[in-house]
Image 1 (cartoon, rainbow, N blue to C red):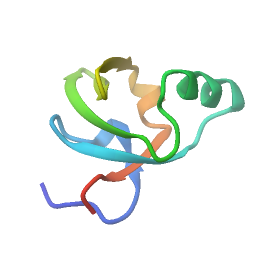
Image 2 (image 1 turned 135 degrees about the vertical axis):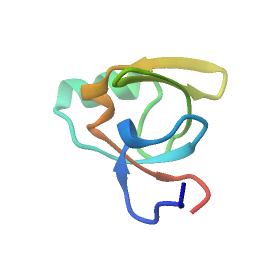
Image 3 (image 1 turned 30 degrees about the vertical axis):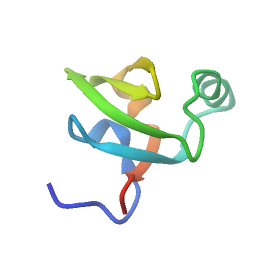
Length: 81
């Protein structure tokens, strides 16, 4: 897959891709929940596994399952771009 220079939804990232969170297009409650999980702006995560529309991401030693709707509200950019 070609490297993405502009932000795209985390739900579109392929398995194995390392990405950096650029913005959260969610409400305040979801923003707070994501921040509590360590998924805040600037955090680098790797898509470990895709399960239907949901996915599992790794942030350091933690593994976090994210539903498809939530993943589409997290805007990311490839980590090495």
